[in-house]
Length: 293
Ligand SMILES: [Zn+2]
Image 1 (cartoon, protein in one colour):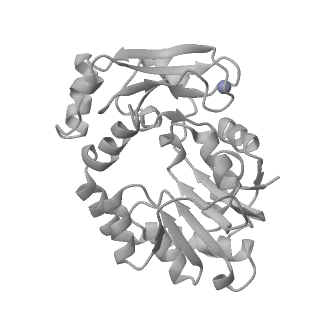
Image 2: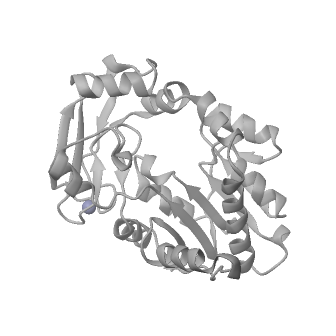
């Protein structure tokens, strides 16, 4: 069939069909063509997209904002396998500052408080693992870790660092204590089905952490100044679901999950920074811990 666009006729969260268009332009418009050509350094198959439209829609029922034209499976493999610059993405991780790893280590500290038992008894899944650096940190803290990653190149890299990579999700059952999905759900054609599947492989008190780009104010920005390529939360073809904290909570609720507040993590050396971070994580951001309802 080749690389093609397909249309999402139903809201990916509430399944209703009525939408309002917030922005629409043809993938063959000069601005969009130029952006895609530059961003993917000539690797994107612009001809396969030419007859389709980049359309940002807002669900009239639940207010979720999403792209209605998305790539088919072959298109998604091409996009994440060939179009995106894998070397640059790996180099970014390999040259990351210590700050990134301190962040990961902070999350491990939170995890060890959420699961106050020996870490080797805690089974984690990193869903959409990428190159495997978060999983590697989890392993260093003694957790039992599996990583799932669709890109063979990234999965292979994670394997080479000793991560136990799984190729698909197991059948429903109490497999995991914790599932971590960082910057994954904005990319998924069927986010609700995927989250329901993840929920089905958690232990009864298990937790899921979701982190997505923050799409609040996108509607206002589009109204005020139109589309611009720096609007990361609605990046064409990639960020096809544009979440706010409210819509992320709604998605989770429909998958049988509810928000849970992680234990406070403050230290005296940077108390004010810590308080600001805790407030923002608890009430503002689009990164949230969930547990089974
Ligand atoms: Zn909806």
